[in-house]
Image (tube, rainbow, N blue to C red):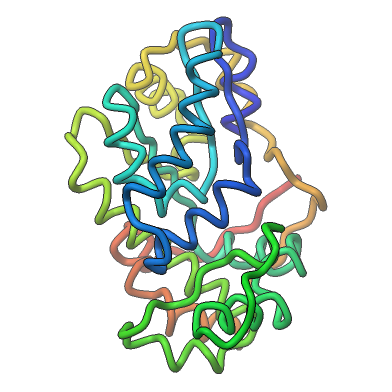
Length: 257
């Protein structure tokens, strides 16, 4: 959605998951401690830095959850960079990932390959997306429990953990460089979109806001509410983060395509 809206603006180069076969493995390795800050920043400078150097216009951006694991490195490399932490009700995210991404995220085989590599019992997986979804770090209280999770539970853990990491990392970034936005507010309120536009030093136009009326990047235009078992699993794993993000007590909503 953000890619489509901002790409339509003059002077803006906007991406969705820029260089993902580089950034996604890098992000997971950084989270798991397999690369250090210096190594991560070298790769980011050769990708994002190079892209910025050769970009035309006034703004360059990327909309990618992969970058959540790399915030400290991005903030250090690009001191003028700004970060929008865009969140959505985790139940909708988990349902979408489970039903629409399918084997692209946390399938048993790919997850086992990454876990074996992290444990030192298997080779490095290839850079394709299915292999590079993080597992809990050594010493994490969830590490052993996670090994018994099914695909849906892994997705729930990912949503909670990626937001936890983003919140902690962004708390260390100067406040004028960060903005927290709920998707549910953004698609309903022109004022929220104007706030985001102002934050990014971009012009606000009502015609741009109209693009939020219909969901984008949808490979299958369908919405599935969680069943009772999934709801219980999600609440057990991600209920605390739901409360932290202001979703506690809210009923799960349906999306009309």
